[in-house]
Image (cartoon, rainbow, N blue to C red):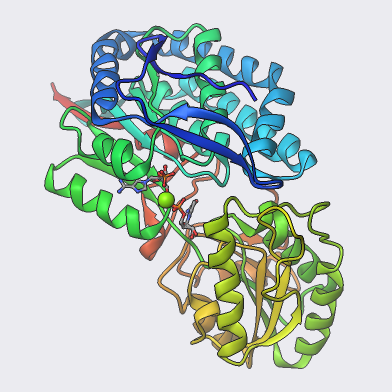
Length: 464
Ligand code: NAP
Ligand code: MG
């Protein structure tokens, strides 16, 4: 795999300030595929200064011209989609078809949506005798995770650019090659120097330096709740804007009148996709007592199709593998019934975890409360609809979810009572314009579409 040995700052690849590097490992075979520089506070400072210098010019660029540059970025991502898919497969381990359709495909959609929004959005509104100007917040520090390496970057950078902000990105240490490819794409798309900057490195050093930098106006973070809490506290102390996209433990609620086979099959596919490393995954399936055993049987059959190394890839690294296997052991220990998979690694090489299904899971169990971030489905039993609602809302998280009912009306009535940011009704399709983000401890702020754009704007009102 191609790897740059510098940082992308001010429109060029510059030598890193230090000598340390990060080895990038392919989780499917545990081989080192490249090295990238481990950024320091000095690299972060250089990148923030470049972003600051570029800010006035980019902020003053007419929205139609910003739209054209984001459109060009979308075109480069589309033209390089095979290379992107291969890079994501190499550093994340996801099967190539998934990398092509989702990891490479969705960012093209999202970038395209922001090319359109930049051109059509009203950056000015009238309110009585006031004109309200919607102005870019300034320099954005973006910190992203490895689970959807390019999507997480584009979901922050595209709206920031559309708003007129400039960006410094610190991507996950496990997936820096995709981030370097994205930096190349911004250059190829003709973004002015300094509008987008990349510092690879580890979270505790480069990430923390970026979150703490006094000349960053907004920190946008996606990742674990533990780190998000820390970043929120740092931003609060400095009185700066912060957006946090954190964990989830979403419910897939199958109401008594729903098509059970369809709801179970789609639900299993949702959890197994990307080896379960999806913050919005519906990891808790809720089924009524009457059809419970039928649902468990259907889930066990469905999951058998997810063969490790074929349809399901490894998890990202050895630490995540150990963590997920620990949760499976915990589930057994706490008395859940294992109906598929288990804690043993299914392959000798690579960080694989067996696709696992637990039945007889009760709401208080660790595996029903904590984000596992692996191919592990829990199935819970409810007595009636109010009981289902209680269980669905009984976690600290509230990121996503699904409801299946006899019709949309019944499912929507239930969804209205859920404490969560996004709900798919009877298998509703992904919408790149729909706001994505959490209730409760799943986060602060929204990404995607016009709501995602507004995160990067601040208002100034002029009275006449
Ligand atoms: P993480 O540590 O929160 O990583 C997210 C990003 O934050 C990475 O770029 C990381 O850098 C950086 N970071 C880490 N510590 C930081 C700090 N002190 N200051 C600033 N930035 C920092 O998540 P993880 O360790 O990769 O995964 C752990 C768990 O988080 C997973 O098991 C899962 O439950 C959850 N997770 C959630 C999402 C989501 O989309 N909501 C995504 C990934 C993980 P490094 O790459 O160097 O750590
Ligand atoms: Mg980490």
